[in-house]
Image (cartoon, rainbow, N blue to C red; front, side, top):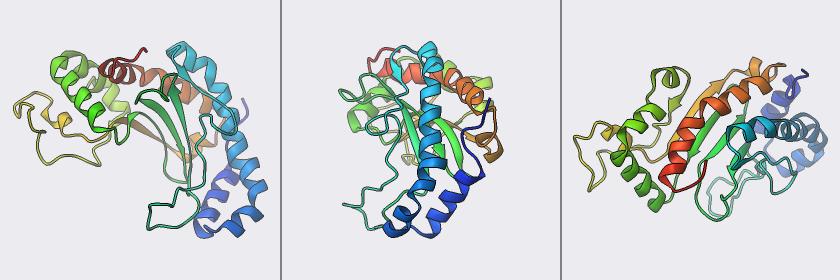
Length: 228
C-alpha cells in the first residue's frame, strides 16, 4: 500500500514554521497541496469504511472545504499571536450530530516530531463537562473499563495538560476516580512516530486506533446522550 505522507510533507511543515508568512505560503502552496493537503484528504477518504465499521454515526469527510480536514489558516482575530498559519495539519472524524450538539471526535495530527491520534472532547463547554463528570460518578465501572483498562492504558494516555487543583465543587473528593473529575479535557491519545506516519502501514495503524479508541469514545457519547 503506498504511503500518504513523505519526508516532503515534514519538510514543508518545517519550512512553514520558519517562514510563517502569507507571501511565503502562497509562493509554496503547490507544495502544500501536493505533500500535505492532498495526501491528508486521500487518507480521510480511505478511512471511511473502517470508521463506519466502528460506528455508523461517525464521518470521515474528505471534502476540501467543510469536511474533516481543518483549515491550516489560524484564526488570529482574538489572539496576540498573529502568525497566519498553523505549523501542523489536523483532521477530525466527527459525529454526525456535531453541528447540533457538542460531541467527541477522533483527531489526527501531522507535525514533525509530534504526530498523534486521539479521541474525545478538547475544552468542552461547562454543561458538557458537568454531564461527563456526573456520568463518571454514576457509572464508575464502565469508566474503569473505558479509560483505565490495562491494555488500553498501555497504548493510550489520558490528556492531563489542564487539571483543576481539586475535585470540582459538588463532587465527592474521596471518589475512586476523583483525579479524572479534575480533568478539563477528556481526551485519550497516542503518539505516532514520524517513520510510521510516512510509511506504507499508516492506514492499517489508524484503522486499529479507531477501534482501539472506540470504547472510550462510546462512553463519552453515552454521557452526552449521543448514539455510537
